[in-house]
Length: 202
Image 1 (tube, rainbow, N blue to C red):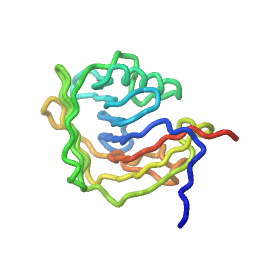
Image 2 (image 1 turned 45 degrees about the horizontal axis):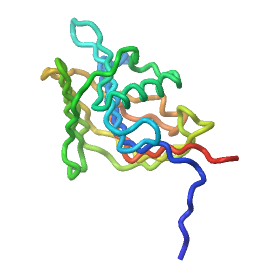
Image 3 (image 1 turned 90 degrees about the vertical axis):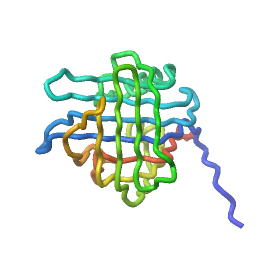
Image 4 (image 1 turned 90 degrees about the horizontal axis):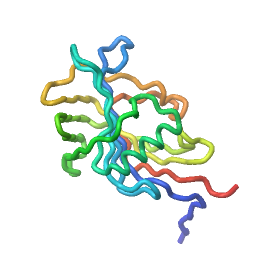
């Protein structure tokens, strides 16, 4: 019988990562972008949910906010992302408390999340999830020191509401995936079972 390989690296993080971006099309910047981290275990940051939201509603000011059910995790994830130059959502504000409700795990072809905070409620949906894509390699944010394993699912359709009002727009191709994955990903996609491992000696 073959023996399993014990990786010499140091496991750092387990998570699911959901991204949903909507734009007006024709190359316009997204007016809605949600990056939701669901972290059941991490070596140093703790566990919980962290949602980064950028929303520019019709006729209103833009909103950049971090929502979490674990304030220490929210602050740690903000610091982690700042350290690698993250800029898709402004991380300057203190994380706000929120609750997170997910659709049943038995629903294999779609995911729905309801994120509720005082004065703000977001419903995000990833529908018609496609075939699983298994990818691994150097972690894009720290390629010299970490590796990542991920199972990716592109959604055929992504949608959102903010405080009950539908967010209009369409998904788009995220080209920043090309250097790592060799192709774009739809801006409505789910990364399940991501494993981040710090490289071992040598």
